[in-house]
Length: 514
Length: 53
Image 1 (cartoon, chains in turn red, purple):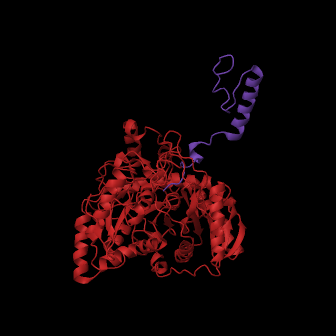
Image 2: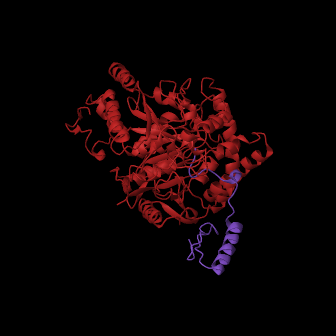
Image 3: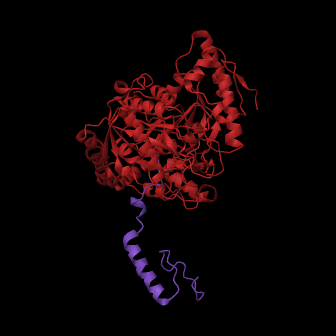
């Protein structure tokens, strides 16, 4: 264990102290670096020591798959640059973790948690990673995930991968971190980095954010480039920030968002992206019309109670609450969504691997064959029936696929979120993000009682979750979602709620719920 | 196991402990209803275990 760090106000950050005494926001780290009290190298070493102490040993969260062997050297270069010419911005020298399905053109590997891709080094950074590096972020490492972003089996355990094993929830170690951005969620909650990046097709940012008590932002499809991300379903895939505060998430999103010539979906991103930290406003909820999505309630009375208190907080902050919004019709989208996912998964994985000839497997068929050959290590708990179903798909010009995609858009957008917003003249919709973390069971798989991710996920619209409270010590989040490109509005609302509710509490790593 | 020692744990798949022939008939009846009501959806229409992507 390294020596404690000196900080500006004379206090010391004791690496062996409880986690809540060491947490710093991105702005606080920046202030400490600007004052010369702490260097980026020291911050990186601080987080690497925490990963050793909390992720490898101690509670053994298993949230981080690998750390960047060059992180300290990169931080040293950024420290020199700060001295020479000043900081690039809010992310200069800030350590950030990436989900292991995001390409980095460095010595880190990119594997989606799969042994089939063990050792795979991407040829270059994903577009969003290049933007983070350009903003001065230090890529600290890769986080564990539900293998293949949970696109392998219908009976998987979220947060389990054949490379990384089972990630644990820091609020109760026998419970699940949800997924598929499991490691990003658990690592941020446990203060193993300043922030992290996750990805979502349906729920994979907001669910792990909610059950790990952090902020998660699932952006509008096309605000953040999909370039260099191992795909699941291109029509819904997006990366997004996961952080301990709305302000930190806003800083990360500001750096990640933008148009990429290699991703046609991002054509409008530059026109819509803003400095999301600048729009945060403690008074933002005054006069906002928020619709309560009742069809997302009723899955767990504890989560419902936290949500009702959150609604009262929103009302006290000046929001006009419109109750009784019913999005239950969106549940009809599931069959179409799965059909779309299957077709896009095959096309996407094949294309991703085709463009990376150095990868150890070259197609989805190769992945399936590898898994079958190494079933003892890859499939000890659940198999790969979803990959196999995807492999049987006809292709993206199949009329069945095209009809399913059209149905998704119609149900989730026209007849779902768009209609609710228009008919009730709403600024945003609110709901409990989901139910508390379940006990991890690799044999029977996940037991998620409820999650309100599909409407925004299938529509491709933004969704922000912010900590709202606890059920038996387990965090649950408040969800806010709206029409496309409304990230700024949602972040402003979430920030105002966060400041008033002050609901986040750092984890204490109990073995189980008391 | 039933009272007469017969192993019938999987007779219904409905979680019904059967002890008599009447119970067994009832269990099958329930099982038949479950098959109708809860026929497992094929992989092609089932999604991943929980959140994904």
